[in-house]
Length: 239
Image (cartoon, rainbow, N blue to C red; front, side):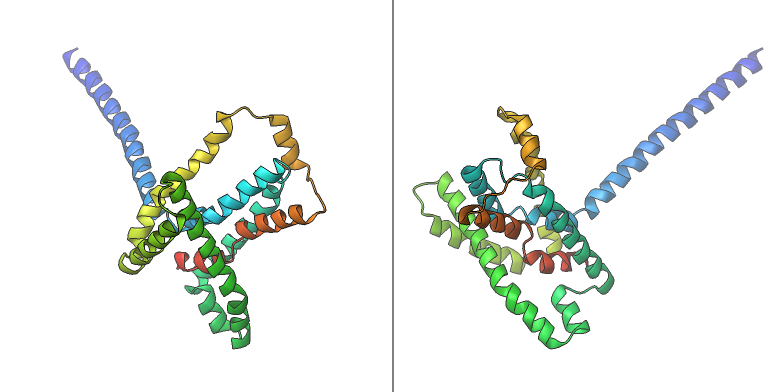
């Protein structure tokens, strides 16, 4: 009887130990997978978040202030275009291990490369300028006694120093945590009273106004959402 009891206790102990091992083994395995995922997460997240730049925020704010929810439907149009471009650039970068300029130089005639640079360079420079001006404007809102120009110059110098002296992995690690701020977008709509029927209608039923102001804001929304620098920025990150 004693031996049977010992055997029974031994079986129970072994089964319990195996259950605990399996349970905590799975938990450890899941935890390690999550840590590995977070460690690898960076290029895609940063590339996608980079499109939510100051110039984009300013454009969307102007659209909302001038036309309310009537431009909300552009999100359904712009998002798949932006996602397709980023996926295309990422795949080209993975296959060729080259940026867009390098891929054009290697596989296409020089005139094609120069034409692409001719059209892209001014748009990219002006986009960066608009971003820095937007950052300066935000700085001026926080500290009204200091002009926006000084903030713009300060941010330009700061970014140049960080880009030149810090390795990409260090910058990516910092930017990855800053991307968490974008989750605020999911919360903000619920902090204020919304006409949700109007929101749904404006999202799925396009509104068009054939005047200069409305057409200009549509071009601005599409232009700032599908930014030209994504072609160049998206690919090297995936090398």
